[in-house]
Length: 97
Image 1 (cartoon, one colour):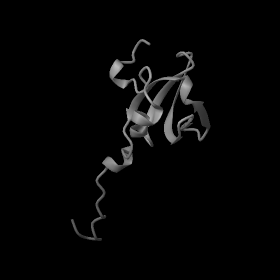
Image 2 (spheres, one colour; image 1 turned 90 degrees about the horizontal axis):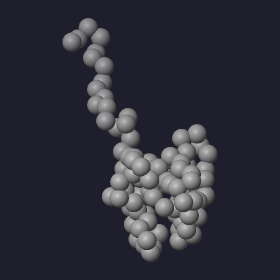
Image 3 (cartoon, rainbow, N blue to C red; image 1 turned 60 degrees about the vertical axis):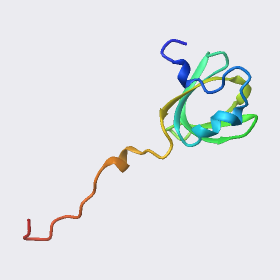
């Protein structure tokens, strides 16, 4: 588990998937699962007590059983989009500065 700090571990031993994982809904995360053999980056778009749906940037959707998830690393909190950081202003009228 190199490069993954304990503070990013959502599903600690015995934790209910809905207890903390729901705070990561619609956030960009890296999910480590199946004894850390696999990891995928994407947005958590669905979850219940048994399954988590991860939607990758390519549009590919993965259903991962919550029992296989070992670590969820937060990459970008929900609701933050890079485009929203840009300030937009109307163009100056013709001839004016």
